[in-house]
Length: 543
Image (cartoon, rainbow, N blue to C red):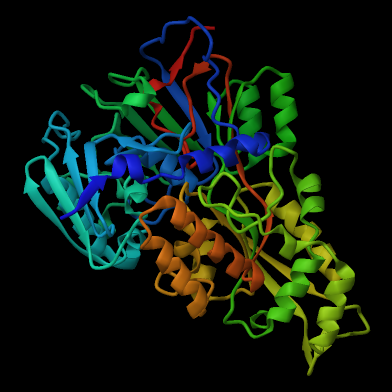
């Protein structure tokens, strides 16, 4: 086959991506390290307590969990074939020492390290990569990773340390996918346990720097340092075992309680720092670790199977009535960018589509009038006996969500649209998404690759938004088939324009991940996807 070094070509758009990162506001800054610039030697030992908002739900790396909080935990248990450098967005070796792709991005060959072992002592080989990937395919929709395997044909063991993954159609996003937690490699002992029985983590055997001590649902997950770990990605500058003896992820749903736990010294790190607490923590000398999230932005996503919002005039009217800047300024702060496209500005392939979303309530009213929606006596519009009343599905785990939606509720009421806010935890949100019991979904998804558009909108993926648009589908599949990253960025721009022009989504704000730490905590970092990296380099100083 004709091949090329995908390690150099998988992100030919790096210069393009860096331009985006450097031109964005502080929300796109790379993760900070409280120990950066100091001469302190890392301290070996100690226990780190990390407060997260949600129970992980499933410690099976490829299973469906609670998003970031799940991946914060499972990232510590498993390694990936490739590593996406958060400073450059480039893919680098990890469990694979090198990789190649054929000319049409249908065959990927990975050469693997020969010095890696799983936590049960068994050696890591090409057979484990094949078994892990085949297991994801067998799990089907039970696995959050299956969407990365569009057109999957087979994983073939060439020899003990060489594996080939082939697809029936081009899959240019696959190398990036192999750097994600859901495609983390697990051992034979894990795969011997039925997929549905792995959520507790007892069966998870990975090559990561920590192993599971114990998991108590809705309370905590305790991880213990693994002896002999020595294969962190080279660019991280870590060449041995984790410094910490253990890491305990405590479930603390309330943001204010997490912040109070940090300031009172009960925990060492907290996730999901709320914008309202940023100034307080900074003024009190609690270091923050922050990074603007790539992926799809927070905003209004429409369930096109619902009659009212299936009308593009109604969707555009909602866009014109949405004052995104006011929502950002009221609910958040300038650490968070106002949304200008379905993709966040830190995502490779981002294109500015803000012209479609100019705030103009008068135009909104005209659009609704033209679509036959007349104002009722109570100020809510009606048409053929049906009120213009819509249900919004959202997750309560991020404090500003409620403030943002209550303000959006008022903005839309001003033009005669009623919003009913249907909030809940992650499982209830996912249940509503699956059942379709909503008109608008308030959501986001972090991923440092434009293929996140496909996983969100493709009719061949989960398609919880019930989109049926052959033009968009063709673009989503074309970007997946385009190996040249400059050309791929052009296709992604066309896809963003299609999503914007059809008002399938209205961007409101981008997400910034913010962690708070004790001054004694060092080496906690966020990766290219703005999620917690492995805590191999984390340590606690005495004072």
